[in-house]
Length: 69
Image (tube, rainbow, N blue to C red; front, side, top):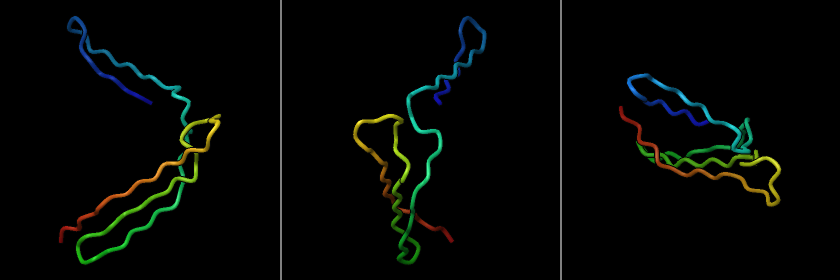
């Protein structure tokens, strides 16, 4: 869902747009490896990104996590 809030002629407006043909429920596998206060994070979504796609596409996320003590 995409939400847009704006003002038009002094009136506050809200628009919600959905229907981008995306899967509503996201699930997958995630893991991280920690080196002291820094961790490497990885996630692989088992659910497809889009409904009714001709080629299977899954999301992969990589990142760094910093722990502040």
